[in-house]
Image (cartoon, rainbow, N blue to C red; front, side, top):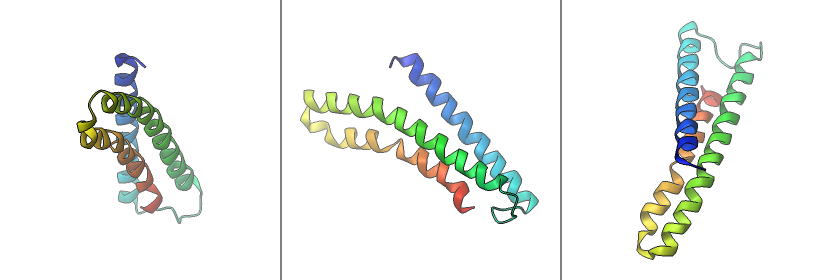
Length: 101
């Protein structure tokens, strides 16, 4: 993956996260939750989690291969490699928030 693809992917993930947070704020303001029975909130939460997982997987593939290359050149950089590899997991955690709200 080149730098432009990664930038586009990151911008898309940020946009999807912002849309999810705005939608959750609107649902909280209206007093609706995942228990109102119409199923649309459950579908929305599932889509949010699925897209977050796909985005995290795509970003983690590129970051993981770069981290392994970095460790092959200099084994003392294990800490930063581990941090950079674990960062995309926070995207999945943010995508899982609608399941619990």
